[in-house]
Amino acid sequence: MLTHAIVVATRNRLDMLTTSLPLFVNQSRPADRIVIVDRSDDHEAVRAFCERLAETAPMPLVIL
Image 1 (cartoon, rainbow, N blue to C red):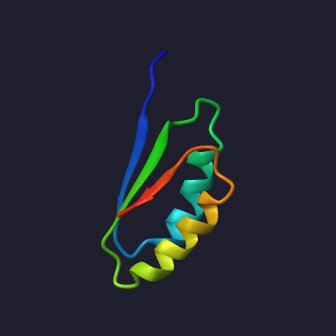
Image 2: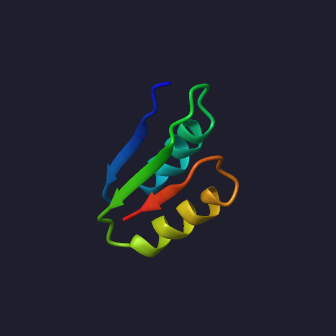
Image 3: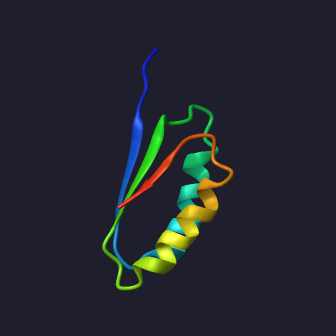
C-alpha cells in the first residue's frame, strides 16, 4: 500500500490554514501524517490552532 505525507509551508496565513488543514485531515485517502512548517510572525496562534485540530485528527500533525 502506498503511503504519503502532506507538507504545508506557510507564513502569516492562519486564515488559509483554518480552511485547508481540515480538508487535508478529512480527505478520502488520508495521509500518514501532516507536517506544518510555519514561519509566521505569530507562530503561537498557528501552533494553537494546529494542536486543537490534532486532538481529533486520525493522523499525527507535526508543527515546526
